[in-house]
Image 1 (cartoon, rainbow, N blue to C red):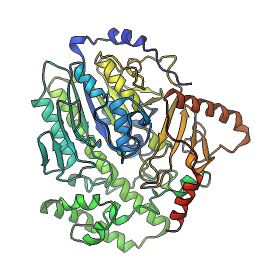
Image 2: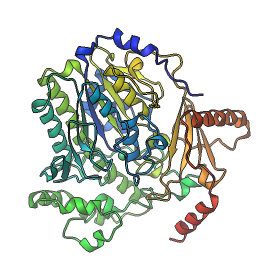
Image 3: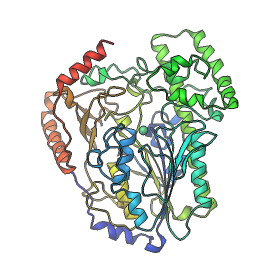
Image 4: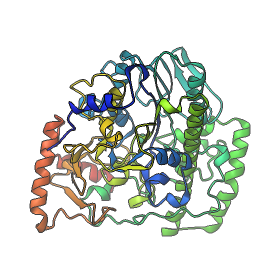
Amino acid sequence: MQRLPLKALLPILFFASSVSAADRPNILFIFTDDHAPHAIGAYDGWLKSVNPTPNIDQLAAQGTVFTHSFCTNSICGPSRAVIQTGKHSHKNGFRNNGDRFDWNQQTFPKLLQQAGYQTAIFGKSHLAGKPQGYDQWTVLPGQGLYYNPDFITPDGKVTIEGYCTDIVTNMGIDFLKNHRDASKPFLLMVQHKAPHRCWMPALRHLHLYDDIEIPEPATLFDDYSDNAPPARFQELEIDRHMDPHYDLFLDLVPDVEPQAIQARQDKSAWRNLQRFTPDQLAAWRKAWAPKDAAFHEANLSGKDLVRWKFQRYAKNYLRCIKGVDESVGRLVDTLDELNLADNTIVIYCSDQGFYIGDHGWYDKRWMYEESLKMPFVVKWPGVTRPGTRDSHLIQNIDYAPTFLEVAGADVPEDIQGASLVPLLHGQSPTDWRTSIYYHYYEFPSVHMVPRHYGIRTERYKLMHFYEFGNEWELYDLKKDPDEVTNIYNKAKHSKLIESLKTDLRGLQEFYQDDSDISEKPKQWQAEQRKLTSK
Ligand code: CA
């Protein structure tokens, strides 16, 4: 069963800290889109050797790295709705990216505002509609653009020339320098579009990593032979589904085949490229033209072509992350410059993980580790001990109650997460949760990842692809961290499976998940026919 820390303990821990009601800490929440933990040096993943994130690593060295931090539903908008509300998707009403977030509901920024915080958000909201609960806000419409993007402000739409990550960082810095109410603590949410698809780096980073090979993940050529059927019918493989022209800009500049590009279902790459100024376009062409020529000269096929696509994809993804890492450095420097650092909690986080060639994939959605995990790095001066690595199982439902505890505000009963404040103080509550619950809903949809729910404990993960019928997967994460050996059908695990299923039902009851989880194998068979007939 789900266990939560004793709420009664929290006020004692809170007031035992150096924080008083008159001197509550500021919160700087730096949030990105699709930044997998294994693309952060401090998380010790296979990309560490690239040194992708020196500034985030420095933040991590000064604070706590949560090594077992997970989302509840691995997709952009829904993860943000969970963070806003502290509730699972089925409770906050935002299950799929196609849903509309109800801003009239209870959110943690509204509660912080009521508790006397000055609140601001800049960048990617990805929750349609005007943000509520913020004294100041400027947000990207929808996914937003990498270059010369539009923004929605309380006074209408504006277009700002430059690179999106830099512009959003500038907004955060401008807030800190020029728009703070010094009589109040602040919540500042700086939310980047990067490193979301279409992975467009800043011009200054177009040649970064040109001289190295990015290490390949161990599962780049996974054949899914051990998985239940869904892993073989998805549409997110670098090999079969990643388009070199659309996803990797091969031969793609604004005056080349615009009709062909515009005809594509998702035109985000085209919309981004259309925005270039003449100087930006010239720099873009100059950087890519020799690389494109070398690709055509090489005439690759088979695994060599997959490897080339992986390199180009991973490099652009990591180049976007370099822009994010520089943003973290600039924001942290600004806190120092303004003498705010000692009383500001700094958090680095992203809405879910991502496949960087793991299992041969890009994108997210699945409950497998690479997209289930979220980075969560916290520096709270005077509270978190430098260099701490915390392995408690945490989820994005926990952020809202954490911020409320930090602010000394009451945590409403209907919030489903648990405050991380005791963990940040270095405590290890004996009744902390021993499992997490996950539920993904967006099917049929882009990438064709079917609905599934599951439970992850410290050691095991059990997933049910219920629309397929009786299709389950079970992994022993201790013996098989890459999840390539599905042990669900091994007879010797029947007692373990029975126990995990009981706990899974317990989680569904605990979180009151009333979603339709009836099996629909006929619907799936129809989708499968459509797929295989393509
Ligand atoms: Ca995302």
